[in-house]
Length: 576
Ligand code: NOJ
Image (cartoon, rainbow, N blue to C red; front, side):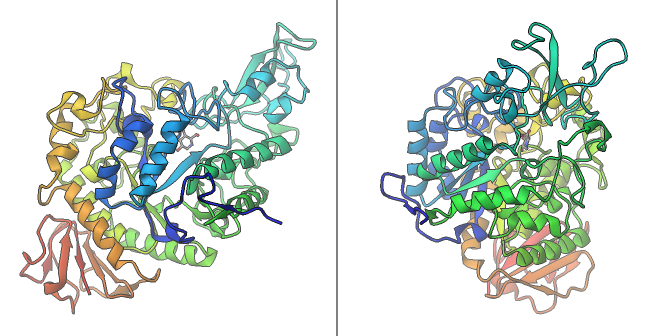
């Protein structure tokens, strides 16, 4: 019989036992070391999150998702985990974690934590044991250790087992100096790391690896965690049968299940096992897959109720600000979610991408290479049209927050924060910067610690931040926007409050509009959303009742509109 863990008997209480809370939740992503620093060491921490629970509650979000706060050397911002069931002492303690969960639950906010199953850090006990053991030992079997290939110069293992590149640049293999066995003291086997050298990939065919992650899920669920965000969910099952050399180089994104490393059919067996664990709890714990898989029916498998329940789709995040793209993506994702039994997810920004207010300020059609070139030019060329970027970001947010499904928001977007494109080179920490030999700048610019006030040292963040904050953060600080009509913070607050009213059945009806630049939809309970993606004013759709206008991304308060036009690059919400 399945053991049922009822929240309450020793575990932190859940907010209330609604098993479907996640389906239309507004989830706020906290990047812990950049959120709020309670002890002045320049690094955000868990007590800092607890101290800001009032802010989060007032913002009107339903859940927080914390990026990793586990012990880590921070070779990849905490996605290199030393110990899955502990808190990095720089970020607090398990007691601090419990206090944070209790305070979130008391405020009606659920807690989602990140779980990083594709790789550990190279400081994890298991990896240290693997390095201290001989090739072929049980300790090595939990990771992906292989002999190299002859280099033709006398070293029979001098070439890596395959030519796969790491996701952050450079090769995906590192050779170790053996400390045990016949080659002790010499270079020996290679281990796989799809990301940084410090992030050795697990062998998910190993039963101990599978069992240990079940233990980790239970560890946090027992502490009252309501859900999990699953890092690199599509990467766990790998075809490591020999010879590896003959397998195609890493493609990262494929859609037919033939890639040796990503989105293989076997991965679903792993998540079916996770679902069994998550369903031991009442309410069942939620989970969302981070799986950068293109839109096919393969992607929706991760989101099936028999697996994680939800999967990120990054389509809107990758799309230009355009009527056609937004509407067709929304239609596609809603039908995808319906087919899988999940609800859709929406996201514009996270800790891995250039903040969307900046993306929208750059020329339409900018490619990832263009965006990197802009970062490499310290944000100077092309000159971003900041007003336009923020205008579009606000319009996009209201377009998204009216949709059925879960909205994932990234800390700072509620302030209209822009990318910090000109971080001093010597402050950069993203492994991408180092592994690409300083040719790809990476993700630090969206991870700069938040500005809370415009008047205090370090903008009220705490100690001297681990990444420097620019002067222009001042007017964007939360305190500077608090109570200011038309500010981005007040827009988010108003929208998140109203969102609770407009949520109904998970469906919508698209409405006809006179302009191809205008997209409009109505929710079953009568709420209507109209977005003008164009650069000039456009006619509102027929039948819109201006007296019902409740929110405008353009800053106008309800009732101020007296024309039948909608401003460029803006969204309006109408109550039933
Ligand atoms: C995805 C995470 O979002 C990213 O920050 C991290 O670098 C990689 N996975 C590797 O864990």
